[in-house]
Image (cartoon, rainbow over all chains, first blue to last red; front, side):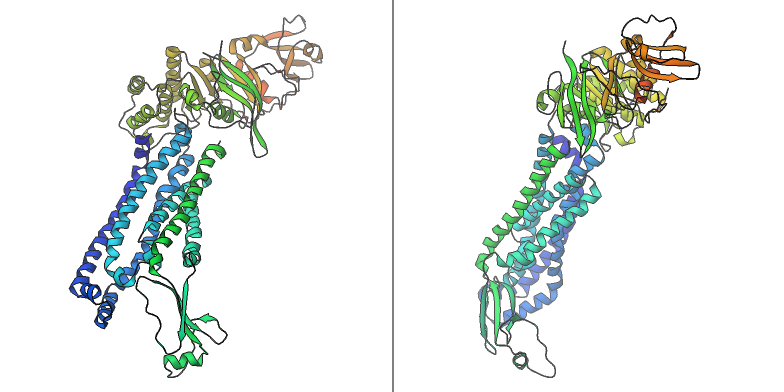
Length: 311
Length: 314
């Protein structure tokens, strides 16, 4: 059965591998350039020995100006797990149902439970390996900028730990489930994308900031706020208006200083809401757990559908 | 003697519609049986139930006394199945399909598979998708035969084949039957071809078994009676009238006889198998049945000249 799965899915495997190789080449080339620039500009030494000094922030600014766009491209990498789900997961069962080959393979001498188990084990294993290699590369790629931007803010968080792997598994599991449910490859691909976004977006936007109660600090207008480490995650910042609401909308006209403007808007105090950097791993494991739970649910449903409903 | 296939009040429901209902039949081992019936009669459903692809909604199905769903490890190796339109992995070469068979079947006979492919002139390095329809059907059949099954189920194996491919397909099948004595159940519309290869007939219509038995017996039992116009009640009291056709002067009956026919008013004729099949299929629904396995006795009903979408090809 292992040979059959390999023979059957090597095509998709090679396509995924090809895409990953292209991404990897891009990451290696740009990563080498960034780390070289990071050392040669002196930013590396500066952050290592004198992180509080002002020359650091100037160097940092220069680095960000040069590579900020590149770093922001990493957001697109969040679609990689989806590629896995749509290209490998969705057709895994759906193509067999579409081309009626399930009638061929389910009437050989192995049970369909073993058929699905073998398929899943191999495809999940291979995907996990590929996602792991990609994760290592991404962590290395981000290592210079991570020293001053941290790894806790949105895109960086997604590409810096087990959440990345869990997200790949989730996409794959949703793809398999969608394919089993939809029985048509094209429909399954759309369903996979919809399900993946429907789970990931709310978790990332609304749930993650509240895995643990965030810390909010307020301080009077015109004074210096708390010093946050780059590893802390600034969830929200702004001011507290006359009604006591947190906001970051300012409306000023004319040549007012920022403080005058704040006062004109009735600001009572500045505030910042953040998640301290030492919660990074807790948050990683919580989110990993959430995605894995959804993945297990989807795979369980796929097994049930194959054994019960498709009969 | 054990039965290769046995079903007891077998039924399968999709939503509210029964695809197969109350199906009781027994197929003795060693037979080559034809399963005929109009489209939508439940032939595919019956074959899928027998192959363990479907779970019965009611009743039970057994092959050699095994439940294909509950005992797949014992039942699956004894089954060969070729689905409608003989699906294959189109991207696999013939060689790779044989490897698939070898990897997935403990009783796989690679020598037989290769010999058959060679005899059929099918190149092993050709992708399945590049083969002609007839060759694909042959490959699917050889894959099923090389499992060394005791029961071979074929779902409309001839439907998509041209007459030549049809003949070659049946030749491969008959050779395998002669060599191994396996039991075959094949569904088809093409009655002419079936008569050449089958010795057992099962007629399925309106999701029920209308007739099942040895073809020679069936031919012996069924007679056409032609006589002056009269009511068929007298005949129906002894024999089973399958089809009655009255013109102004003449009455023609197709009966299943349960003994000798004495009334000299009737001229008795032999009936072709195809006419028997059509007579059963044109009965809208069977009204009465006796409960014995494989037997279904239909009450007299006027012929409707409708063949329930049955295609007759000779």
